[in-house]
Every structure is written in structure tokens, then in C-alpha cells.
Length: 284
Image (tube, rainbow, N blue to C red; front, side, top):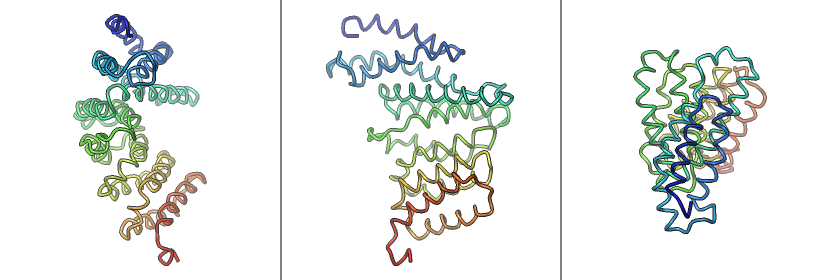
């Protein structure tokens, strides 16, 4: 990397072909390379000084953008996934989280904001086809949302003011419910809880959306976990009278639902985060 960076760019281009391979076992062979390269470019390694690191990030930026496209394809559920046995579905989900680690590596090089802009642009391109056939086209949209979920950061000031994050979160509640898309979208809202803590005006809309997931058994775990994350990160804002009333109504509404005990515990924990912010007389 220090002596022949152009040669390494050529090597990375070859490994891109492996990362884009439809066989998960083949693609996964390349993942450690991207991790080591991202560490060097981001300052985790010892080979480059600061000036060299800036130049090298520019040199590899296009390579990592192409990597994002390959990774987005890798996490998309195949058309036959509805008929998979449980063990095959679990294996694919584990692979997707391995891909998520590589997406995080790409964010170190390109920035989280730039990566979210890439997947949001891909999502927008696919929306017309999805709108015309939600049941047949949800997989490509879900893959984009899954990728965006892996791209959060707490170390990048631009992330918390990026318009694209606002646009993404505004879009999620409007997407037609098809396949696993609602589950992934609800989990994504929970993952962005720290961003929402700085944009409290969006919380009522996000709470309504997450609460809607509690009504479907397949989305209840995602919704209860997302609610817990939101209430933990945004407790100070949610302790206001209007949002506290919304939360109480939400919880009372779930009493008639057949939730798993773990999901019920998550909801109680969510409420406790907010109640802890209330003055004692108001609690009593």
C-alpha cells in the first residue's frame, strides 16, 4: 500500500469480482481483505501517515463505491427464499450480518453519509417497480433498507445533519408492507434512535410507525426492540406530556395482543426509560 498503491488498486478490482459473486461462500472469502484495507485507510493500521491516508482514500473511493453495489446485491433475498427451510433462512441471515460488517468498513472509507446516499439513490431507482408490484419487488427495496441500517455512526458530525437520513426515515413508514420489508424498516428506525434524539420533531411519527408493527406477530419482536431503543435514546424528549400520553396509549393497546414474554419485557423496559425522566410527583 505504501510502495505500490496503484498495484493494490488493481488487486482490489480483482477482489471486487469475488465480492460480487452470487455464491455467499465465495464472496465471504474477500471480506477480511476489505476489513484490513479499510483499517489502513481509516487510521487503524500503521503503514500510512496522515497525508498518505488522505491520498489513498481518494485512490480507493471508487472501488469501495462499487463494493457497496456488490454488497447490496448479496444481501437481497432470492426469489425462492419464501420456501427455504428454517436452517437455510438462518444461515442467510447470519451471512447478511457478516456483509453488514463489510458495509461498516466501507463507511470508514467513504463516510456513513456518503454510503447512505448511495443506497438511498439505489432505493429511489427501484421504487417505481416496487410501487407497481410490491409483492414481487419488495426484496430489492428491503436490501437497500438493510444496508442503510448498517451505516449508522456516532463519530461523524455530518451524519446527524445529513438531509438524506431525514429523507430515508420519512420514507420508511410510507413503503407498502410486503414480505420482510416492514420488519427490516422497523428495525432500522430503532437503529437510528440516536439520530432521532437530535431530531425530536420526528419522534411522534416514528412511534406511530413502530407501534403498528406490534399488531403483526412476525414484526412484534422488531417493533418491541425498536421501541426500547427509541425510548432509551430519546427518553428526555419522550417524557413530555404529549409523547408520554402516546406511549401509555401504545402500551395499553398492546395488552390485548398475544406478545411473546421477551417482547413484553422490552416494552416495559421502554416505558421505564421514559418514566425515569419524569419528576417524582408526576410519577406518583
